[in-house]
Length: 231
Image 1 (cartoon, rainbow, N blue to C red):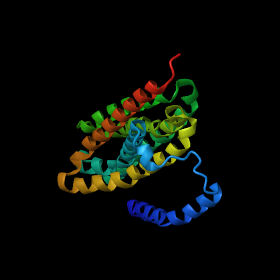
Image 2 (cartoon, rainbow, N blue to C red):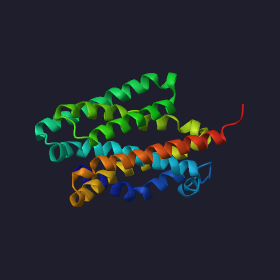
Image 3 (cartoon, rainbow, N blue to C red):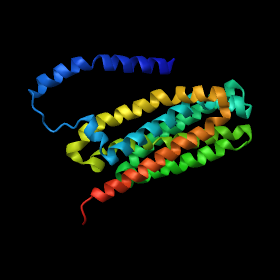
Image 4 (cartoon, rainbow, N blue to C red):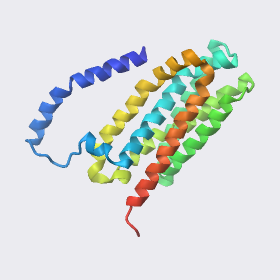
């Protein structure tokens, strides 16, 4: 149902684009200004990496939120009631982690928090793949919630540093599109694949999205360092 509503919102957004073109031309008076087209942005390796990062980390978050209870019931033998309670610990970790990452972001910086989140996610996915006692999985989901928490907001926070203040506004809108594409596509695509492979695929799918998240973040960080002026 949620995926269907998101798809409907996406269709309505595309149908409304002609209306926004009229408003945009009226606001700018036909001036080109310094806006960058999506095609020009797609030609930049750093922009492609941040798109991949936000697509992957958002997809990972929503796959975990949508399908972890089904995995616990089908593959770990928990009752639906207990599994639903355990999933709430994922969202507790997500909420607490986002609060804490906001508190320490200025002191620690965005990149260390992103790397810490990826490490926590790797630990959580590894533990999720193990046949642990049923009572342990609430802690595993709590760790995964804490791991997911800093990834999206800190990458958005780093946008001016990664792309410069002039390009950041143009990149910001495409970042949101990449994130929402991951949110919309990842859960139903996983659900479709799991119909043929079974829910045992769940930790491996999360691991794939984590590899994409980690790779794109490291690549983006390297590209940002190459552009940084020497001191």
